[in-house]
Structure formats: C-alpha cells, structure tokens
Image: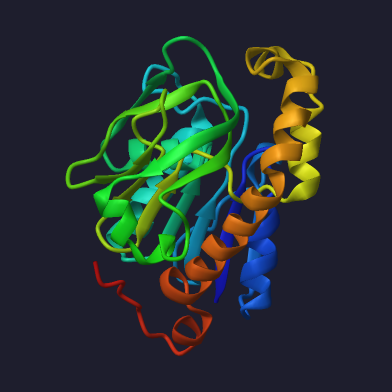
Length: 248
C-alpha cells in the first residue's frame, strides 16, 4: 500500500510534500504522468493521492486524454473515500473530476507571491491550523476553478482568484497555489523568462519577491504538509487499514 503521487510536469516536482510524507513514514508510488507513465489500474494498493501541477490545461473546453484519465481516477478515489490533495493543475483536475468547472483566468496569468486569505471555513480547517489567515503563497497559473463541485466549500481566495483552496467532503482538498515548492523550485521559477514571468514583472521582480517572502512561504508550507501527514493522510492509520476522518 502506498501514497500515490501524480507528477504532471518536470518543473512541478512534489518537493516538500514528498519530503514530509516520507519523513512521516509513507511509502510512495510516483507516477510521472507527463512522461506517459500509467496510473494504477485500480485503487487496491492506493492509500492516498497527491496530484501535482503541470503545464497542461484542465479547462472544460480542452480535450486531453491524460487529464480525462486523471479525472476518472480521482473521481473514483473520492467516491471510495481515499484522501486526496490536488495542487494547482491537480486541484483543477480534481474540481473538474467531481463536477466543477475550470476556465481561463480573466486578465492573464497570476504569477508570483500572491496574498492568500483564508475565509471563515478555512480558518477552522485542521489542515490550516497554525497558519496565519493571510499569507503570501506562490502562484503560477492562467486557468482557474470557475465553479466548485456540488457540496464543495471554498477555503481561501486571492485578489484575482476566488477559489485558492477548497474542500469536498471530509478528505478531498485542492489548492490552486504551490506550497509544495521548496527553495530550489521557487528560485527556478523566479528565474524564468517566459510570458508567465513577464506577467509578474519579470525575473528581477520575482527574485525580489522571493527574497521578501520566500522564507515564510517555505515555513508555512512545511507546517501545512505536516498537517496533511498527520490529519489527512496519517501513515499509522493507513498502514493499519483504518480510514481516517477529519472532523470539520
């Protein structure tokens, strides 16, 4: 039995999430989906699922067999009660899988260190305990969740993105931003010279923001993934075959 990590792009590693889950005793199965590696045929050996970011699009008006395959897989995992966390593209795939919608972000990409605000629901959620209600988090996306699945609850927002974090049920979460990026991936993204970086003022501006916010971003991310490992995907309960329920 293992925690399944779906990596959707070479530049979107699971980073701090992988490090923390391993530290808390998780066995990991890493699927490099962007290389064409297949998902498991069923959920028999899957304890939990982490679906990461990538450069693909999960918009409802885009047809992509890889995205559609993940939608089917994640919908099955949610139905079976498998704990799931989607990050950036992974959150969009998850929302679409469960009946939500994904579209283009009006005004172009949201990149850099956005101020994220937890709402009254997010402030009480166990995964965000010990994290300030307002934090700067690293964003790198041009698509957004435009409507949540039935029963979904928004947990956080930014000035440009209404759904920066959401919950469906008790063990299915999505985050639009990138807490999984540690110091290395953060710097690599801030040094990029593409249109995403240009939308945030270029690499010089991004590196200045990294200098200002990077330490706190990593510190808050470490706290978040410790909560994921303790409350959402606890290895001790998983290995005993006991399904864990978070109380909301």
